[in-house]
Length: 342
Image 1 (cartoon, rainbow, N blue to C red):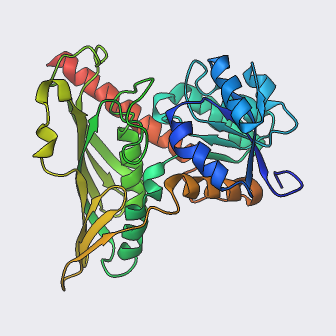
Image 2: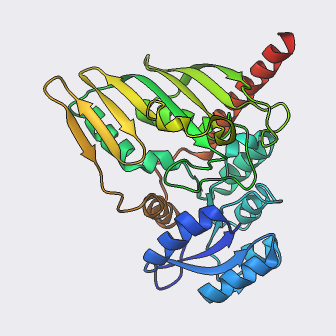
């Protein structure tokens, strides 16, 4: 059993930023009966010192120094910064559970080595896929298991304003932008996989660069579409892109609402993340605005606590995450080849 004698999981946090401030810091404070932050690290040491002073914990100058502390039972990796997945590898070598919030589809080569290490050492490892924990998603899964029946088709669109790390209700900008296909693309693909409860069978996609603006890296796109087929016959068609406010102004106010249509064997649903769902199973329309308590952070941290203390987790395994990353890599290469040939 991982944890201190009083039952709390003593946590070392790596990477202080918006995700820490908006999701995990308030959540871990609310769950102080199960968690205690004992050490923090950030590439800006002064930031770590200030946070440590506030939390009354240690500020570490090195990653290994944090991981090897005797009062750190588990490591939270919340920002890529300069070190990528290196802290996760250090934690696994030390046999300490890892909570990883990085968009892992960007790290295929490094991820392969990490999967081998996790499986060899048998270390609990949880990747963060927050859309699975949105209230609307949880309610949808309940309906699919009951009134609506099995899902058949998902149609949807998401717009990002700036660099949106997790969409609502997470941070609104990325400090280290990722390609759209990686983030939110890989998270949306996982969400579809979660809704269907089945692995991928086929995945194709298209991309476009609508505007040439300084904030878009060379060679990257600002709109993406994918079509996925899942074992059992379910299909998903999703599009997502960046809304360039500096060029298009307030057009998002009259564009159709972002959301997801889910068609099932006995009905259909419309989701606006994170908490709205409208559904019908043939007799009347039901609109629900679901409570956002417990928060997404609370749900995720409770899941990690159970994983670290007892084993077993409803989140995808690290190998399943690697399979998703490989799909994204293949799709990205095919798009690059298509753009070169056109």
